[in-house]
Image (cartoon, rainbow, N blue to C red):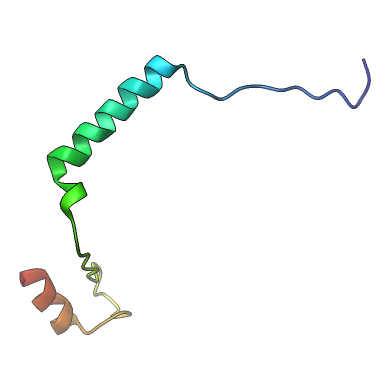
Amino acid sequence: MSNNTVIQSSHQMPKTTKSVEHQALSNCVETLGLAKIQRHIFICADQTIANCCSKRASLESWEY
């Protein structure tokens, strides 16, 4: 055996597992209504040190 031997492994999951996981993910997307989302709002979550907007603006956004 040479020092240049390459060991190959497959990290692919069986199709049945993919199918079950895909169905579970599809169910989550449907339940949460993610396919219908048209807009995203990014709001500062930690205003200890205001890096992205003022604390007041952030709180107004959260209230909305």
